[in-house]
Image 1 (cartoon, rainbow over the protein chains, first blue to last red):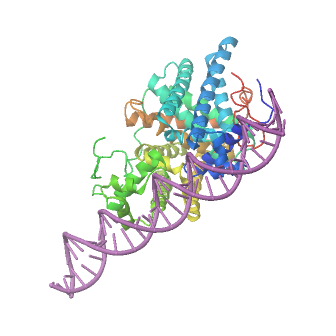
Image 2 (image 1 turned 180 degrees about the horizontal axis):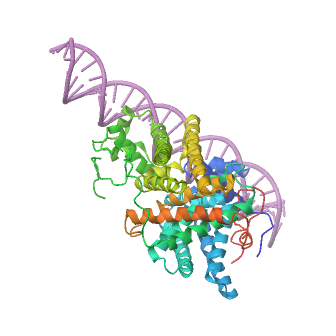
Image 3 (image 1 turned 180 degrees about the vertical axis):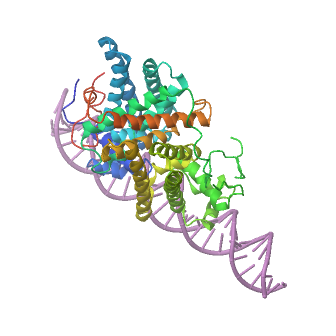
Length: 232
Length: 232
DNA sequence: TTGCTCGGTTAGTGAGCGTTAACCTCGCCA
DNA sequence: TGGCGAGGTTAACGCTCACTAACCGAGCAA
């Protein structure tokens, strides 16, 4: 466990501030001058450290994806060595993800918000890492809940990520006492969700809820009279 | 229960396509020419219908917020008339939200992604509607789980929104059989999460998870040094 | 017919912004 | 001392893009 104490390099300062700004106002909403100002240099000085604005985003997203995945793998490895039960391994995975979500909120936000601003190759890389990370979870979840079919397990894992990554939204002041309480609550929520997913898999009592609530700007179906580009 | 069958007006077509495009590539990532092309007119023709690009986003976000809130209120009212138990009322709320999430995915995405591109007054309005909607949920959740403290209930509701709104991410092909199955699964996940939040509130077995996992570009605290992929 | 509104069109403008060019100044090594 | 690379600076360029100006044709009422 090497928690670094030495000062961050210029590159790291820049990436940190860029992550914060991108998360706050979106990739396109932030100018290079602003990023520069945030670290005390101005505008084009950034180009001594990065090939361009895109390169910063790419490095951020690839970085967080790699860390999530490798963190997950390490969890699994340690759990294997320690001979932990599947349930405990899942707890470790959840705890690790919560640490990411709470400590690197800005990156988590970016991670599922600006992915499509990347060059094709980088996007592919990030997507692949994401997929591998998801499959890690799916494997453990299905050990804990063997009765849960694979597709449902995968969808549930995505949903739980949505749950855990919601921390940016509850960042409002005075929301929860402290970090540990927030982590514990998120942990319970995640475990409970997964257990329930497995629990009632027989199909069921729900699903017959309220009528489709006729939408105003229905979009996804696409059909409608709505003009050109019929196919794609 | 007015499921509209008549053709959408021009304004509605535009809003629908704008929502889709904004959700796909972000507000700044879409040009007015593109929105126009999507409805068969080109570029500045849009200004016959809207004051500007910002106005479209504002109308979309205020609209979805209003619909979410009023849909929630209607649920509560109907549940009250029918004399439903709190649990059933909560199920109705969840079902309604899932309908929104599944049918108006693009708007749900926008809703928590582009909020800060709004003029102050519009943003305030949207935030207020969001808050009221959350409080609706908090009230019902605390009727179902009286032992859950208010702050934890509120945080849990936010987290459950994150869970339910994760549908855009699992949109990938072949993820789940059909809409009803997805809705049922999301429903179980949400109920399970809330039940678990209430269940172990005493603080507990969790929380002692893996060490803080020193972050790379630590941002939020502002202080701290962070290392580039230090360990591994 | 005349004339007015509604909803389009194309051309142009002006601002913002990413990026590059040219220059400057340290600290360091031979 | 001389050179040189690392890391800044300011000025300027060029492109994108929201928005405006000016014009136009269909429908329609008087």
